[in-house]
Image 1: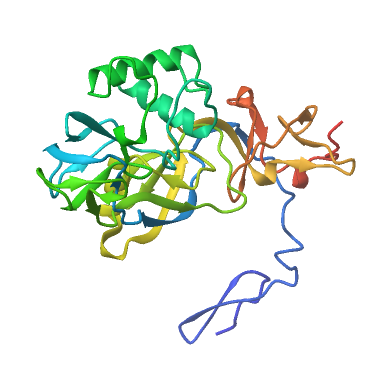
Image 2 (image 1 turned 30 degrees about the vertical axis):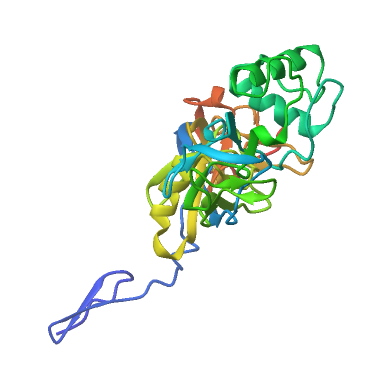
Length: 332
């Protein structure tokens, strides 16, 4: 039986379909590209950034008293938390308060004193309700009157205008958890006597940010689905409740990987990268159609394969393949 050999027609031989090859290449015969149309879409950007996180521990301390006398009352015990402004103990008839600060007082404070230590004393007086406003590190008349009232109410004399270090005990930069009491009711104390000991406790979550990290609004830190507030550039989470949550999420290792993101995602307009043109003059634009004028844009970021643009462009017509179908792609 004769075989049909027309170009492109099927050949049948021995029950097998055979296709004859055309002399014209499919690539050479391809039809010209057609315009692909779309619109400028909207997208949510959360600014996610991978970060390393690690639990930081406070150094164990043994807070000491500067008071002299007999302990007549104790307001702390093993396992209890001692926080800034707490009444810690009574020595003879004078009440002794705990305070938290970056550094301890190194001298008594009275009118005319100035410095960072004075600001620490002022902050304690503010927190105890004896002073108003913000600490300024300058002990003037108002601070003197606050000290006088404090002394009168807590056993340091009616006309005493000096805040003595004997009236306070530094517990470190933050609240302390008592590991073991060193002194008890009935014990005699003198300057330098340890009141209690602490154990190393979680103080912060260290966050290692990449050098290029930026934020356009408040951030959160997400570690395994546990989310807490985070301040960009700070490098730490210090809120005690947040520290505990992240430490629990990290488990026994105490370190791992998390991510930061915007607390409230921002809405942007987004276009596919092939729709964006940068011409020979360095101007950047998109096109609404095959023949329309260029629309200048300022890229605002994006993701792999997309470019973010002004949200005002959302919904506008967009030529998706300008390089393939337009005669000119100049952005003027």
